[in-house]
Length: 89
Image (cartoon, rainbow, N blue to C red; front, side):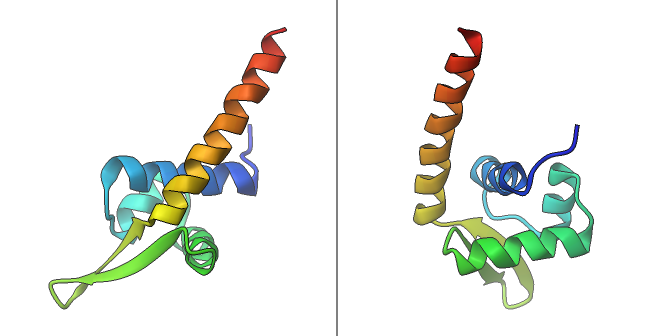
């Protein structure tokens, strides 16, 4: 089954929450997306202030979830929990 854009955004935020700051290749493999697509999703999440791009050791680019991203993930996770409860009824 294909994921919606929304579900993919949530998946990327979850990966960053669990793995911490990550290189784009790690995000590609864990999110099961190619480089162009993951870059598009990251660009959107950066514009929304949910993710930030960092340079580590003056050479390596990593992406990290922000506090705003954590808040979004918690909010939408609560909504998903409510939706699953409704499906069970």
